[in-house]
Image (cartoon, rainbow, N blue to C red):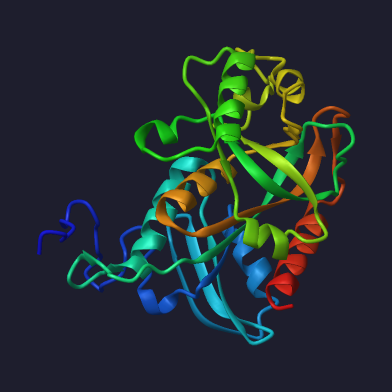
Length: 288
């Protein structure tokens, strides 16, 4: 019983479901599509052949069903890497912890997790309307200061380069996504490297009534080139997904519907159609 996880560390609801997601292991498919917006869950599941299970708690809305005969779960996470840390930890526990004995299972189960999200381009050559798969995620948040993980040489170089370029008082982190999923669901999409920000306004260089501390963050990040790796777009979750996926042993890929170009100041006139196109691309690649 030495490996038993205490009640305070992994909270289980009275009905046996995991605390935040409100899910039991049987509710979860081995292929998971994630979206930020709870209202976007039904925009994915509307294409399912059938929906076998739905539940919602807080920002976490879940639909599990089948598409072209393949069982798929789609879950909303809300925004930010803090939510992703909760989501990935509890999702992993559903397949790798015996929730009754509270002990890790002897056999590890790896999930395929595909994020479908919106994003802004930081390069003039990547216009609104582009569908982009993230090869690397670069986190400008501090989540990985609270975990120990291994980084490759090029990931370490990118982290230090971003820190130096922005003059940050902490070291960002850089993690590569799943090569397997990049080759499957990422096929046919532009490949890029995504910067994950801890906010939508100041951390992405937007000024409304507060002047950002790094007003030229887009230009500074756009000038970075580490062994041919250039940064392409902004959003708020990808790096957290990739880092937690590495720590927990899951295949994770972030797919981005580019709805704005921060260099040309262009915003898509119909962002919903771009997201819908990405949803159908993902479903069809998963069942090809």
